[in-house]
Image (tube, rainbow over all chains, first blue to last red):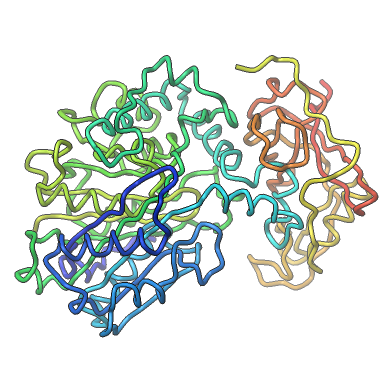
Amino acid sequence: VATKHNPLRNRVVVAGVGYGPVAKRSPFGELELTLIAARDALSNAGLTSDDVDGIVSYPDRSGGNTFAGPAVTDVQRGIGLDHLRFWQGSAAHGCAQLAAPVSAAYAIHAGAADVVLCYRTVKAQRRADAAARRSLSPSWLESQYYAPYGIAASAPRWALMAQRFLHDTGQDAEALAAVVLNNRGHALLNPRAIWYDQPLTKEDYFDAVMVSDPLRITDCDMFVDASVAVILARADRAADLAHPPAYIEAIAHAPGPVLDDHQIPGLHNVSRWIAPELWAKTDLTVDDIDVSQVYDGFSFQALQWLEDFGFAPRGEAGARVAAGEFTFGGRVPICTDGGQLGVGRYHGMEKLAEGARQLWGGAGDAQVDGAEVSFVGAGGGVRGAAMILTTG
Amino acid sequence: VSDGLSVTTMPASWTGPVPVPEPESEPFWQSLRDHALAFQRCDSCSQWIHPPLPSCPRCGGSDLSWRQASGRGAVFSHTIVRRDFGAGVAVPYAAGYVQTEEGPRVAAYFVECGVDDVEIGMPVQAAYADYPEHDLSLLVFRPEPS
């Protein structure tokens, strides 16, 4: 049941964001990529490592997860965080791609820390995923019911959700194509994007190889080696920071009644349950959002986020993307950095970084003029979280 | 994009993932070996339960019975997998979820029809692919004869 209780409002700001260089195969190890991003974020915030008293990552290596980044212990030592009061490395379950900043915001609000470094680093994902597929056998616990049926690995599992979503909303491949073309177009404005210099036409989209119907390879974000760091701070420290405040207005992450991707009622995306929770926590409405970083790890997920949060009526997201409502000059530009479909598979926390940059006026060629309210959402299946940021 | 001719064919021997049952799930896998799909049902509140649990999540009752299901259901979602992700079944293959008549949703391969012929809502009937070398039978569904 959605609750209006939101003591967090305007208590925490995004202080700075930073990036490591993106590449299909980076010359940097995952720790160095992370330290580059972390130092970039500190510089961006106008802070030094001595100011940081918290560190969080999702997921970190200690969970043994194949898609984890470096352990917080290594990053702490690497960047010299000698005054920690709060630290946390989490496993892959929970608030998902925004889990680190969610935990950081809660820790700051509760008085556990004042300035928290969050990072997400993805590296060598192809090798890790190949290893994970081999280790599918033997399957155990809940995976025993799905792993033997050829749908447990990435694209097929999401394809089943995509198929059901398109069926239920009366949309088709044209809707998927619209999102891919929209976000790939935005990537042409972002030198950091893996598809920066590679325009995609509608013909290219439909010519792309089908991986698992209805998902073509172009519907799936490109694996990259990348790192993003986001620093959150107490709002009453905002005067010491380099940027005008980007306040966290509200956070929500209600997962729905089932925590097993294969058994979700209706195979709906988690955004279905996060939306009422988020809107209950704010007096703002969808019409107040100036810029929206919806999740687009797979193209159809962006449509789900748009419809579940009311950016588009049910069944119309694809047509409205195609009509230009969600690009620059349209009603609400989405995925302004190119999204994961355009930048590459940062895996979600870059959504928060881009949402904050837009409020600072620091989004370069992708800046949405006068943006005062940012929507940020990340996650698919049962795992996800959403935030609203404002300039106050 | 597809040739319209492919049919999902279960391999003669199994090289894909092999389940390791828990005490509460062993009867499910045994029911497949017996070619008689079964689910747990709560004796107290009649709730069907799948995947299996040690007790009823609705009423907390610990008296659960294994009841044979009809084996009938409808396709809830489906995909044609065209890239080899290590499933142990030759691509392209059709797989997805079936909403059974009793309510539980199960994963399965779709056989005895073109991979292109599977549609959401299509009535299907359970069948079984046996791999005695692994003491394993897998659930497959074929179109229900009309």
